[in-house]
Image (cartoon, rainbow, N blue to C red; front, side, top):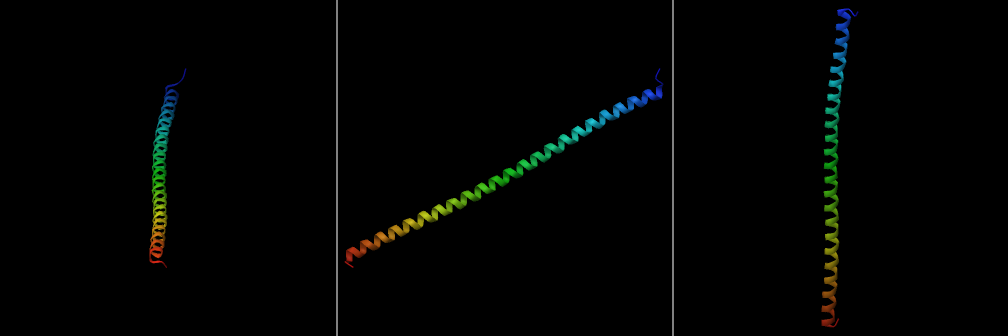
Length: 88
């Protein structure tokens, strides 16, 4: 027969291991979820920032290019028209 102290020690060890594993899993899952959410949010914010920056840069570049092209074309057209009209 198993003596009572040995039996109690066995039960105590079993409960201790069970509680330890449960706490360890809970902490691990909590930390993992927290880190995952933090990284995901950070990556999402960086992605949005880069997207907005590129979009604004391209928009400004295209706008300036079109504006300059139209301005030069109109200027040349008016200049030629006036020149021909005056007979220079």
